[in-house]
Image 1 (cartoon, rainbow, N blue to C red):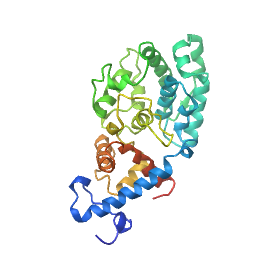
Image 2 (image 1 turned 120 degrees about the vertical axis):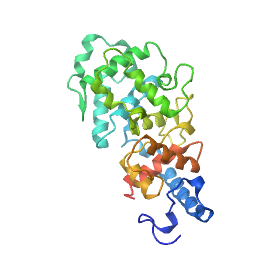
Image 3 (image 1 turned 90 degrees about the vertical axis):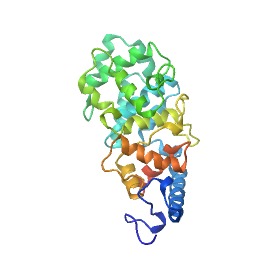
Image 4 (image 1 turned 30 degrees about the vertical axis):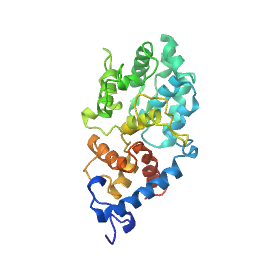
Length: 283
């Protein structure tokens, strides 16, 4: 091929089909795309990524359950400017005495008014108080949040089913407010589930780069689905890794299928490359 593909040099052009369907004469282009992304993973999957990202919130903790809870809130609040996200998450951790697991299990009724007035965009104190209530119900019965996704006996096998199960479990309590459902996405509503997929990357993916935690071992990195924010989506479309119109669960799966062709055991590591290209390099 010659010329440009979506404004890219010809060396980075890519067919609008899955890599495993690409004609032989195009495999060199795909190899060059992989080389580009591998280079950017090495560049951006580094501890220097942490301070300016919401993942910095769970990195304040060492206790597994503290990482799970703080990481959950950091992920579902991860929309808008990163500085604002981080500041509001720090405020929330302060309200939980910087010991979220202990607070969840040991708080008294008189400890809850401190959360009144908490707000991040459309997430408010009603949503927060319900999730504190749900976390207490859950952690009184379980050691780890992982089984909320996988089921008690790892009987839930696909990421789509795991996210749907988690959503149903979170809102299984009788007093679950309807308004809070919009903050916990589910593939059942066609959502790409960007924030929960990011959370699962943090929890599941072992990471020599030191960013992700890899503290959950029932789920495997190969099963994860790539988080698709606006930066990742833009770069992925420019590289031909996304061809579907719109951003929904099937689009996230399409991107991940392409990334699995580059690394079937760890496809979501390329989230770092796509995000870095979009945010840092304005690709």
